[in-house]
Image 1: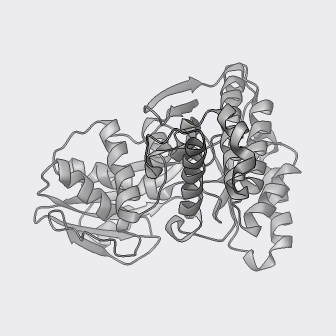
Image 2: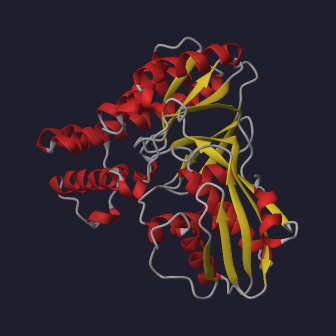
Length: 390
C-alpha cells in the first residue's frame, strides 16, 4: 500500500499535501564533514514521501510504512528526551522548529521510503520532509539554511548522532546533474554542472541486507577519536586555546601532523591519515568532475573506500565484500560504502550501457558469499536529482 492510500484508509479522506525529499550519496568526502572538511554530494531520484494534513488540535500523528508503529506527541509538549524509536528524529525536529517559531497546528501523515534504510541518509530526508510539512500546516516560510540547521540539530542534539552537515545540505541544496561541493566550515557551497564532455553515468545502490542505526555503532567513537587527535596535536604544539570538543582536524595543518604523528596513538594516526588523504581526494575529485573525467573521479572514489576500511576502520564483513566485488566489476567507475559504513549499503558510479550486467554480476557474487542474505540483498539504479522542494 502506498503512502497516500494508507492516509486515505486511516483518515477517510485524501491527504491535503504531499512532500518528497531525496536521499543522497557522498562520492568523495567520507567521514570528514564533522571535522569541517570539504565534501561532495549528489541527491538521487529516490527518497522519502510524506502524505499529510493539518491537525488543528496541535497533535502530531505520524505513521511509517517501514516501521508501522504510530507515533504521537503535541507540538508544544514534545518529550524532551528521545524515546528510542524511529520517530525520535521527528520529535527533535519539532522541538527545534518550536524553539524559534511558536507552533499551534499539528500534522497527521504517512511516511514511505523508496529504498531500504541504511547509508543514504534516510534519517535526514525524513526529518527534512517532516519539517517542511510542519512548516506548511503552520503557515511558516523558512529559509533553506534554517531548514538545514534545524534538521541537523534534531540529529545531533536530540537523537545523539555526531554527524556533520553533508546529509542535510545535500538533500536541501542539491541540483540535478550538478555535483555539490560543500564547505562545512562556513556553510558555503558550489553546484558544479556535469561537464558536457563527461561520459554518461548512473548511480547504482547495493544494499547489503543488513541494517544499522548510527547511534548504536562506532560512528560517534570515530568522531571522538578525530577530535582527540586534533586536540592532542595542537597541545603538543603549545596551541591549546580551544577546548577538546571545539577542535577539529581542520584546525591542524598537515605539517603539524607530520611533526607529531610518531607520538600519537595508532588509532589517532589512522583517523588523521584518512582525514588528510580524503581532503586531498575531494580537491582532486572536484577538479576531475570539472574536466569531465569520470574515470579519474571514480578511481578516487575507490581510493576513498580503501581508506575508509583501513584508516577509518569502518565496514561490516558484508560491506567490505561488496566493495571488493565492485573493484573487480567491469563498468563500475568507482564505488565505496554509502554513509557511515557500519552495515547499510554501497554506492557506485557506473557506465549505463553495462547496467544490467553490473547488477546481475554483483548480486550473484555477493549472494554466493552470503547465501543467508538472498532475498534481502537489494540493488537499484538512480540518477541525480534536485533537493527538496519547499
